[in-house]
Image (cartoon, rainbow over all chains, first blue to last red; front, side, top):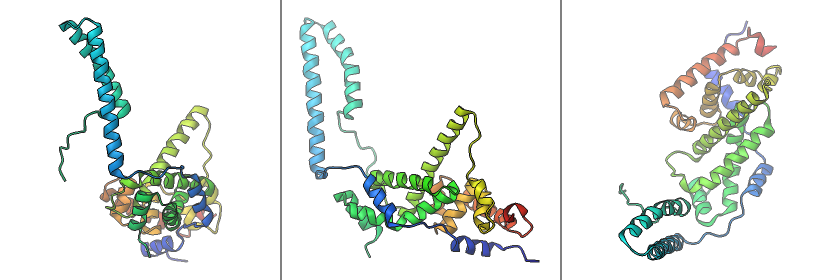
Length: 109
Length: 178
């Protein structure tokens, strides 16, 4: 009658009988499934482009708000209405383009 | 030999496909093996999940901080993929109101695969812990991080898994040796 396997022999068997399927076909398959991507611009250029885009969107929104304000006669009530109406517009722009103002870094490394 | 960190830097900086291919070549055995062990006998399906694991890793490679090994990080992604797949299967099974086909049951009938059969009968957490720690050489800390549980819980899974495996591999266990 054989003795029960002790824990060390179980660990040894697990190491010896480890499943490790490897073949070049799998590597090729993964590489073929990678998305095509254009060469990335340098990070500084990416940041510059991002900031310019945000600035452009901000200016566009401010000009639109100013036009609406003038169209409504330019009184204090027009200022309130333009202000209230711009809130969802800014929120939508933020969700589409990311934060329009750079986030404040609270945690310095 | 170029180490993983250098290959990762080449992938992140230059989108170097050859470097990523080398990472896949190095780690596919462990990732595919882990998923096959967890999934059961279906190698094709486990490989589909392994492919998805590597694709997700490629997308997120810039976020890899190198605090643990790359293999541990890949195993964490693989474990998440597996959980998501099981959730999808459960929803499908509930939707169709039919029993899910248990692929693991097929293995138990093969007399030459005692260890595989016994492992297939362990609870998933214990099986995953044993596979990561002993088959693929992760530390307890790395395996715990990969499976998203505390180290103490992982150690408990390992101890219980080994105990249960010992019981299942005893000659008298007719289910495994049938």
